[in-house]
Length: 299
Image (cartoon, rainbow, N blue to C red; front, side, top):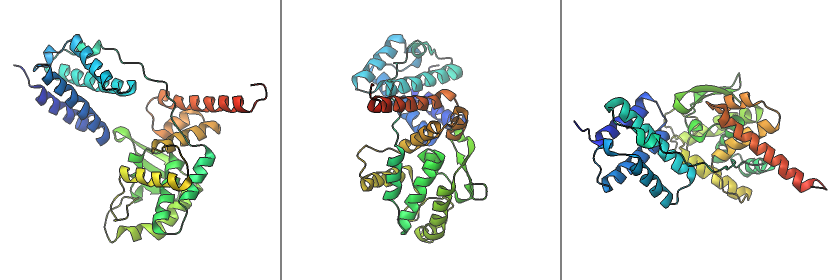
């Protein structure tokens, strides 16, 4: 009996959400990728996943290129569909050869953007103040830079996740993997000021244990953090476009440039594979090369 692709789709999304325990953002991306592919099949008049062969896979990849997507985006979408077909094969014995045979497009060699130390100082200066919003924003930036957390990890931090005595924070990473990350005296002072003078004031008698809150007293969202960082950029008169991961990239780059070993940085970032961390060595090498070329008299 032929199983409707939509039924397999629903089972697959439940699988990645509940059994694989992927984050909300990752599940959402998988869902979009699979839905777009099923819409493509509908246009092509294909109602049985067993009828998807290599030519259809190639045609779909071509359509993704025609949309003007980056190679990295196309590669991720193909990975999503490949995973979907592997699930379909395991559960319903549907052939997954079409996308197994499809090669990923080679990713662009793009180094992560980061802030130089003087730019970080400008960001910190831009949000100094004694009002409740400034105290929150300053603590938020200090904790992000001190720990290299992802924004989704930062907004998930609860008040009891901070251990002031040891100077560490419990971080819930991708796949709900926990890790402890230390922070220094600058972040500690900023957190103390925020919790003592700002947080309860911002809460407006609401009750929850999330560390960072918005001006309505509700838990701060990823989108809220992006807005806060953008405002910092404007006040600091920094002209490059900011995105939250730049703080994380800066954290890793500055650690490695200061002599930290790769394994330690990998553990602090919560990377499963060392290869994910090694990209930051390319940043530091490129920075050294540019400095040399700009300053050596015979460069």
